[in-house]
Image 1 (cartoon, rainbow, N blue to C red):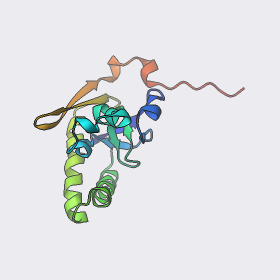
Image 2 (tube, rainbow, N blue to C red):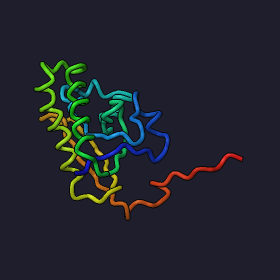
Image 3 (cartoon, rainbow, N blue to C red):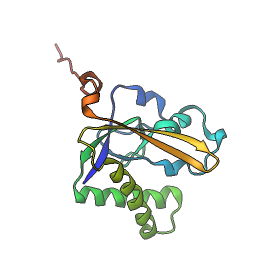
Length: 159
């Protein structure tokens, strides 16, 4: 089973999102957050989160890139539980059981995006507001199409 983890290619997410996701946390599209937004909501850092931010499932922060990785069933179940609790606490879902069903759908959508992709494949999301609601488009960047310096983080030892 595959899902995607937040990845930072540079420090820009720390400046462009109100709450950046933590490197390595599991992530989903999180487009549900914008379901009732209008053009008036699309300002500043909120606009950036709307335009191309994935939702981290631990911090509920946003990240620009995610990388496909394998996930264990127990991790998947824990993510569903945490997202369900988020739906109850933040969005007022009527109960944890109803919220868990929706959480599983959201995570399932992300799993569908990741299945069939090689590990370390990068994904991006682009959103726009349409008359029919929020439209999401996804881009896949295969590991062999990315330069090493785009993915690798090079450390300089302390002297």
